[in-house]
Amino acid sequence: MEMLNFNRLENPLDVQPGLDELSGFVPDEAYLELKAACAEAYVVLHLQRTHRYSMADLKEVIDRYADLAHQADSLLRLYAANDAFVYHYMDLCERYAELEDYLLRANEFILKRSSAAIWTIKEVVQFRDAYSAMYDQVFYVTEFADFKWNYDWFNEAAMFLELDTENARAALRNWHITCEAKWIRRFSDLFDRINDELGLNYFYCCEDNVEDDNFVVHRLKIPKSELKDILEFQAKMGEMRFEHWQRRIS
Image 1 (cartoon, helix red, strand yellow):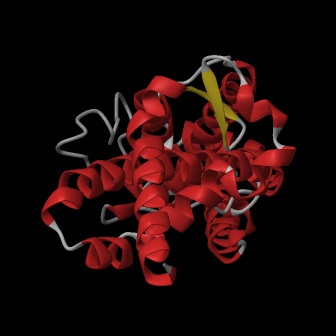
Image 2: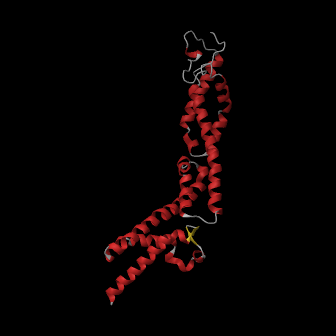
Image 3: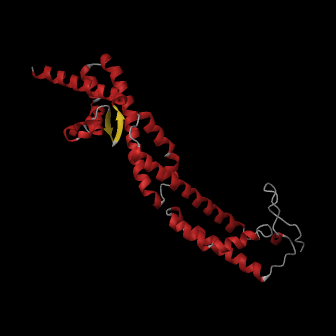
């Protein structure tokens, strides 16, 4: 069996067959033991899926098979029998490295969310969007529970600020061309939702909401100028509701 300068991984686009795939190959005891160990480890790695839900579990699996992976990888250029185990093990190592990077970003997210003084609506939406892909990648991983809680809370704020600001603008564009009673019915749910989101239903106990230039929304300080359309809509709806009922009781 000729082994001089043999490297079956020399060209990734045209991988050579392993020596163990060639006719006339006679395996020795060391080869058979390594092949059996890799085959068993490969099965275990596929059966133990808990590493998808915990970095600690993933690290335990990686550490358990580190020596075997090193041994098998050193012979990967010669033999094909260990490919499946080695490639899958490397995938797990890459996943763990990815999660370590994500954990740093998650901590940065939490720190910035809690330390930033003033947010514009655009900044809130951009910040949410910048971490949305990572959120999907770590959703089931135990170590990201704090990040997921913070992201869900921040996402809710972003959705309200972005969507209901636009809804309020649409309502203001339509109030003067729509029947008053119909306009009130159409946008009544929006009015009530904004009251809830801004804490207007219990404003008397929210002293933080009376700052000079900012309004506290989901514990984020938003410039009042950013909420102009929402507050103008609330004022218009309140005015029209009052006038509507005043006419009905007079």
